[in-house]
Image (tube, rainbow, N blue to C red; front, side, top):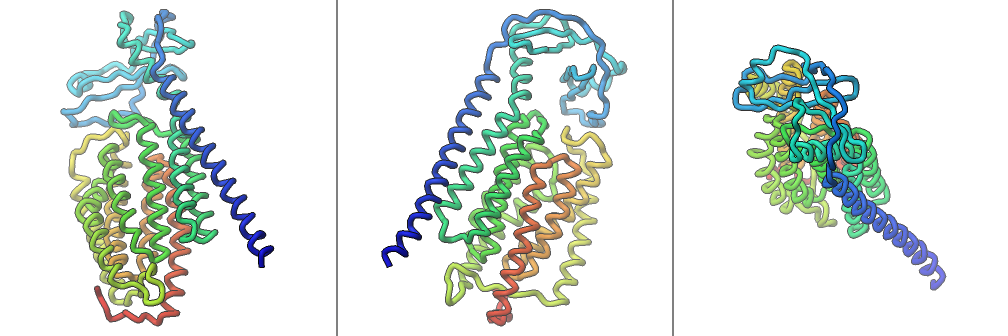
Length: 409
């Protein structure tokens, strides 16, 4: 008997030791990366040395400011890899006729090349341009630091609550987060609407972490998924406001998802499994109910998509009106499916997993169109865990013979 415990305790100690080493390495890596990144951004631009004047061509593919009178416009000029961005009011933007500009090239500290639309550059202008350049160059470093921090949170969750998760669930969760880390470094986000791409990527990573944790808890029939879901909604509201897009989802999140999370937690708490209190009793939907849901989704998509596409909302996240309109209608459909999904979850119906499949596919399409490649990892997590959750719920329903199928609440 003593030998049996020794054999089991020793591996556990080794696993814990490995987890602690990885955790410490991630924390140190994150701190060092943040420190290096901030030191780069806030370093001195030094004395500028004039190099030459060059002609740059205007990149109109990035412009879509028609009718947006209260905004400022970024006009980008390029000459090979050299780039100059001039920010002007909309009134001046309307008067632009030339597609070329004379840019003045200066060399700053560490050989940094800076470009301006005038030759007499103040030290404040030089420092600002230098910091923007350093921020762009340091973006992979900051993305790694942010991703390491998220990985620390992921590992802590799986370690502190190890008994609540199976080996498969731990492996799935951490694998998704590691993939998100890799993609955040390989595919950094550009700035949008005056918000630095580093902050946008941090929001993406946090959204991925919270979403897959919430999904995992739903598959485990745990009512605590709704507590995590509240934080998911807050992060996604911030993302929509930062990027000025997906307003159908934004409205759905504010007026539907946040309230439904709270009342769903209460409802699930009233339907605990008699044998395992951590589980919630779940069941399946009737055929005629599915038809009504599909009809509602179609009507919602057409009406909400038409209304939002008629609004004049300023954003520089998209540079093509056709793409922006397509995203609006896909988003309207995703929000409709999301509402159906929320109701299915509230009533504890297995069909919520089918809604997850559809919603994940629609959101993946938006992510591809929008170039949000790191969020595709989240959708990969959705697809894999949705299959896992559907199987688990189906087995539970069959084994419990739908004991509460007549109960609505």
